Image 1 (cartoon, rainbow, N blue to C red):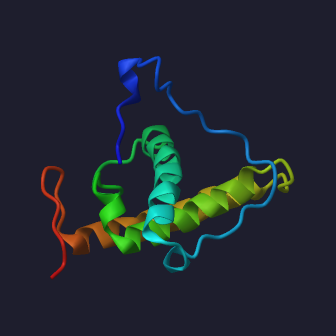
Image 2 (cartoon, rainbow, N blue to C red):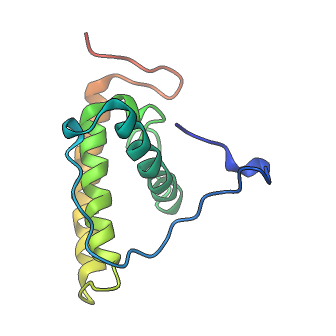
Image 3 (cartoon, helix red, strand yellow):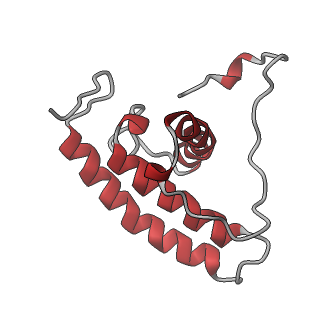
Length: 128
């Protein structure tokens, strides 16, 4: 999931995020086939990479194995959806501020989920 685009590979140039232009459509993960889910996760991964870097989030909020935890996928996907709506060219002027307020609450939920998972920076754990 986590591609290292810093290597400067000209065959695979770094992907760029784009300005959302319209309201996004929510993703119902269970409604998609596994191969479609993988493509959707790749798109989400680009945004999560930006989010982690932009807000300097550590692995207690968004671990490297986030894509292996359905709770984190749902939370991060919902956060991304809200971000797309807040920054769409059709959004109200105060939408980014409301998104930042939602993000503050989401960070607490993300941290709680990561703590329950038992994952550590160098060790992924699955619930069994």
